[in-house]
Image (cartoon, rainbow, N blue to C red):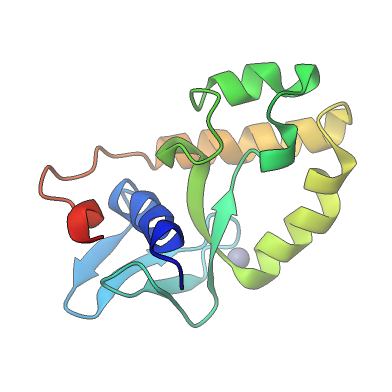
Length: 134
Ligand SMILES: [Zn+2]
């Protein structure tokens, strides 16, 4: 797995107040369904863990999504926009709300609620965070 992608996984878990580290990596819960998920110490996803872009990358730069993207600094890979989700939930979101686009009011609502959930789980990364590994 590319180091850049592992760094994004680490950004997501180190800033997730529900993630706890041990020698085998990080343990957290899916942002959607709260299934237990596991990310290795170097940021590699284990089992069903996948990286969720809460506001979909394709929505950035679209006027209908401007209020949402502003909440994450208008940067898709900002840690505030990253979360760990199980592959099934991530896939369903990709096919559903993400694909319908920000001009769809229901899709907008779903993403907005998910972003609030993510931000409620926010914590500042520890100063000795592991982002420096790569
Ligand atoms: Zn899930």
